[in-house]
Each structure stands twice: as C-alpha cells, then as structure tokens.
Amino acid sequence: MPKIESEKAAKAGHVLFRYMRARHRFKNNVAPPLPAHELAELIGGGKEEFDEVCIEPVASPPIVFDGKADDVFEAIINKKYRAIAFWEPQLVAAWRHYVISDGPLPPRPEPRDP
Image 1 (cartoon, rainbow, N blue to C red):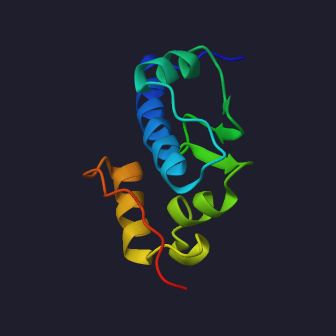
Image 2 (tube, rainbow, N blue to C red):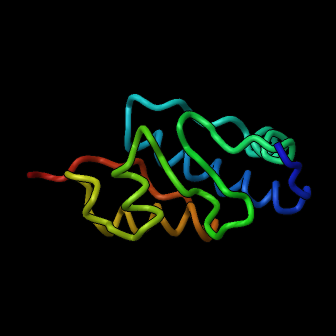
C-alpha cells in the first residue's frame, strides 16, 4: 500500500467521513463512520476501502465506489438525486453539498410520500 501525503489524506478523510455519515443517515445496514482524523490516518497509511466504500485519495471526489449503498453513491457522488427512492431530491442535493463542499449539515432524511 503506497503512503499518501498527509494533506491529501486529511482532505479525503473529511470527505469520506461526511459521505459515510450521509450514507448512514439514508441506509440502516451500513456502519457509522470513524472520526475524520482516524480515517485520514488510515488513508495516509494506504488504506483504500472502508465498509465497502472504495476511495482514490487523489481523485475529486475521492469516493469511487460503494458496494453497500450504490443508490446513495449514485445520488450523492454522481448527482442522480432521484436514485434514492422515497427521498426528496432537494434534500439529497443538500446532502451532496454537505459531503462534497463541507456545507451545512442537512436535517435527518425523512421518507416522502410515495
């Protein structure tokens, strides 16, 4: 595993933390995130997979695959806001802004009426 420079690892760790927090809010069967500084340390040591979330620290955004929550990945990373069924697209867009741009923490998602 190649080591990643600390600045890139820290940035990737923070984005990964926010993504995993959002993912945990939308899905019940996924692990909550480790603290961002712990993720950054692991990334700095070369780790690239966290609870089936694969990252490339030098990519923008660093999250490149999610094996447990592909709908959350599609919505938040690929901007396909309707990929998460039963959630308002505006709320999903707010979560993307939080994850990618370190925006304000959106409210906890509540299902919309079908």
